[in-house]
Image (cartoon, rainbow, N blue to C red; front, side, top):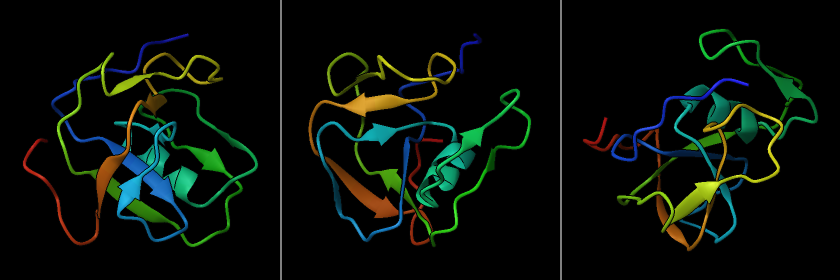
Length: 111
């Protein structure tokens, strides 16, 4: 398995098909924007070959891309998903509730 490049200071995303303002503890986030967009469609099947290849999935729901609206510290606020089927660094779980903003309404300055 490969390692997805993670930088805690860059933007973190969450994809959902419901309106949210706060993400619950234990939710999944990622820095891979396209992955969060795919997860937002609630797919049954999802996969990819490499980080720069298209993500394939069968999701059909209208999805919403969210941006985590606060700084995160790895190992404190978030941790790597222990049972992911994806490469290391793609999926992370939250240790606490996190503020969200819809990506189509605002982009933070973090990158």
